[in-house]
Image (cartoon, rainbow, N blue to C red):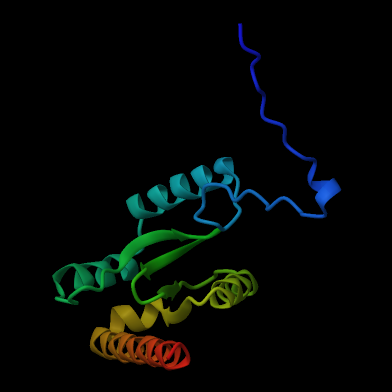
Length: 161
């Protein structure tokens, strides 16, 4: 019979190499599976029981032809739930309802902007009273985001030449 060979792994502390941290499910956000599942369940519940402002804006997005840009309702982004998210643009829309915790919302916005997602805050009152101005503001925000992405692409291509 032949002798079986076994794979010998060196201890990382011997080589000085640190083992990379394992990133869990949330697309590298390092969120536990349990937390991510709870966020998705909460987002489902929010979609079932949306506010009037949210329903009105969702209806406008559903009827609009935005080309390749799709805004998803109550989307989970990292460890936050945003009212609308366009992954392709890296843009989120948050609807400010009366009586919500502004400190928590600002902290969430900072964490999203730290990873490159621009957050646009819109008052629920504005959506219900002046939808045209809100849609114009969203369009301007989208154009700005597209221009930013084009500029970063051009800078990246210029640096690699």
